Image (cartoon, rainbow, N blue to C red):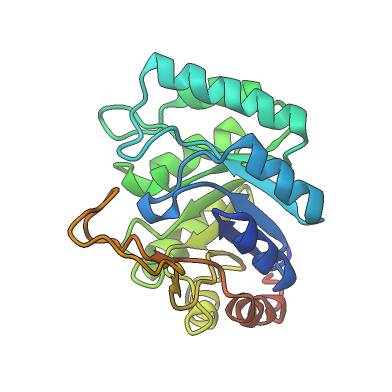
Length: 253
């Protein structure tokens, strides 16, 4: 089994630096976490890579929404994978489903061929799949290194029973990494209850004020439920607290 690991899920330079300072073993770099994450820009990757020694995996997701992709979207992701590979990214975080809710093995294989020897994580498309055990077997057969999952629930803690079953079924062939709602308060419960030793978290604290003085009422640039005048970032102290717990876990037998 892998050593205990904490991955910082970050969508800005500031959050990446905070997670690295807080003890992240790896970063998942993305954009637009407010909508679940999309592919980050090469410019952001180069900034983070320049100033951070932590391994960086790249989320490949061209848009918000379901994980059924058109051929132009597949072409876009393939091109982006090749670009990030050339820039020196450690790995890619990918996922694609069929209309029936199975892992799209052909699309996954195409993306993985572009990734070459990069590490591959199957992202939370897994949590939208029809059958978790069937999807695990497909991912393991493809050679994915990690599955990022909440146990097909609204949070990792809510998916505890499925996470336990997934880890047992994986039997060391593929790493099961818990994500969604992972905090200092529940890491130990996920470890004790499911044997999970890999964790994915934003480590976010309270939202920061944007600094804007003038604020236009009644106008939203995106989701009306989100304030245009709040900034969400990784809190280095929160992340450090999570990392200390994770790094203090014993490696399971």
